[in-house]
Length: 222
Image (cartoon, rainbow, N blue to C red; front, side, top):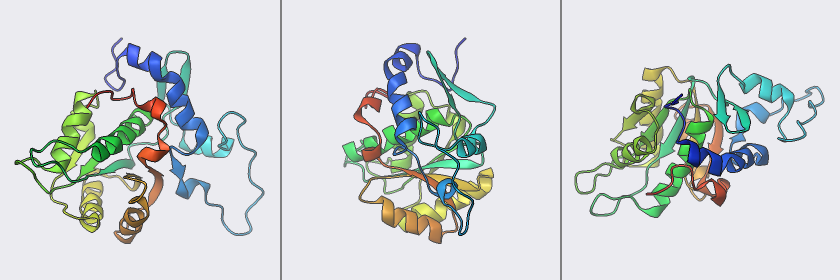
């Protein structure tokens, strides 16, 4: 049966191991809030031998829905309350995307596949040739099988501060209370600070550098 949340079977077969790597390395999704231990906490629950994530954390983030791959089932890590927020990057004069933005979108795509119930926010204005960053980003994701109804397009932001402030508005409108923040490695620190300052609880981050090259077949092509 065709599943609109998953890419075609040949792509899935080619990338099942890559997705497993994304989960087991722990680098692809850096769970900030979930892994933070309070002062005087009980000794940590032993890590799951194959994932490096505690059973307690897996139980907390698992849902009824699973990501189904040939020979592999993964928990759908985040629910509709958590938005996947992908930050824009300046377009070329003709309105096409630069490689850095495509890299961010690959990371966002992997997050969207691993969390098929989570909404996706693409944020970025700065139009070139009449095309805002977020519009180009949404088109890329939709072309690779992410349902349009999952994607929320924010086309007014012209800075990281505005990415955060305007994404917070979108999150409030759709009922999302936490965010997975996706941007470049050299930008994640400033972006995280801006999003936290805007009142957004960031529960995880991902950068293209944390997405193994073997995951590139996800959303293959530009």
